[in-house]
Length: 79
Image 1 (cartoon, rainbow, N blue to C red):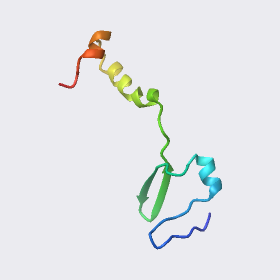
Image 2: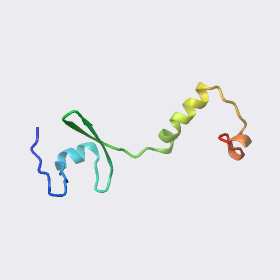
Image 3: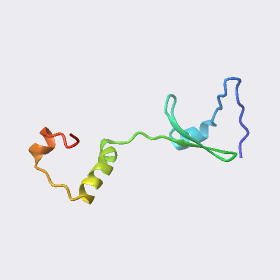
């Protein structure tokens, strides 16, 4: 357990070793969750395009959607 200081504006510094271990860099974003009296801080890691579209690809497979390459490029399936 580590003791931290809260500034007047509510800022808390994370130990450098933790930031390095978790890949938290200056100006990066973190997720903060409050559960009861516990605060959880989780690094928000940038996703690759492949990771970003993975859920879309899974949904297409799950719904067994089939379309041609031309349709994929020219049509808007959400109209």
